[in-house]
Length: 271
Image (cartoon, rainbow, N blue to C red; front, side, top):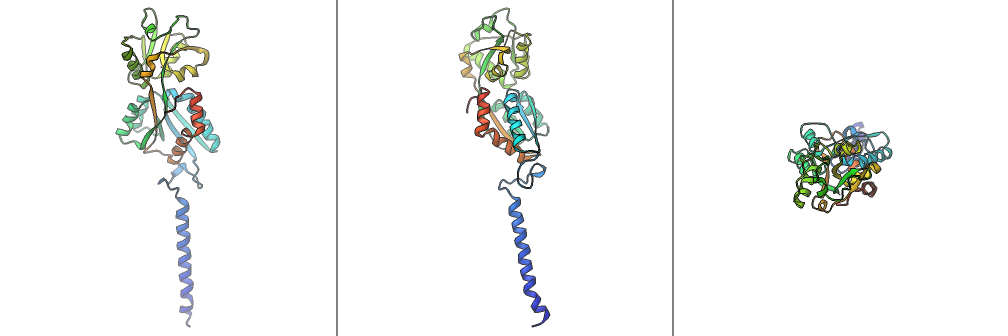
């Protein structure tokens, strides 16, 4: 046998071994989701880096809690929140603002993002919310119904009708056949609540979760018309997410039993 013929089997075995190594490496690098993870995924597939979440103002307390849980669960990560009126957040996203996750207070504002092609997948409703009147601490004006807000002399603030809280309030007022002229329209629900907390207004129509978050700073007054204006809250990972793996992990936390517990404790309703 010649020197060349003795080496041929060795070269063949070496080629087969190299191919097997490449195949194994390719299998290990895939998480089955179609995402490479980019800078947002470590070698183990665990999320890393910053996850940017645009969320409705009414989610501030519960999402902040979940953000801390996320950072503790995945050391080295950070959740950066942008809370505000859902319509303004949607406009920012469609305008190119960098974000990984969008959680809206209504399907209508979420539709702005999906219609623009900025959502990755179909948004899913994760909680619901209903309205409540926030009166001054101790309720000195003895407000007991939505109709009481139409009384003369009361300074009432509402959310702007372009934001979900304002749209829901309009629905509730129409259901009761009432007309209400507020002293101001606020661009998000937290701004409306703050007016009452600072005693710049006598009452505001906000979400029950905001009344609960305010603690004893305001007095909550339920009204039956709120059942006509329950808001669904959809959430979605964004198409141009810079941290896709982090976005997926945050959505998983929100939809987990732990996430539902935090949201339920804040006063949100299950879908």
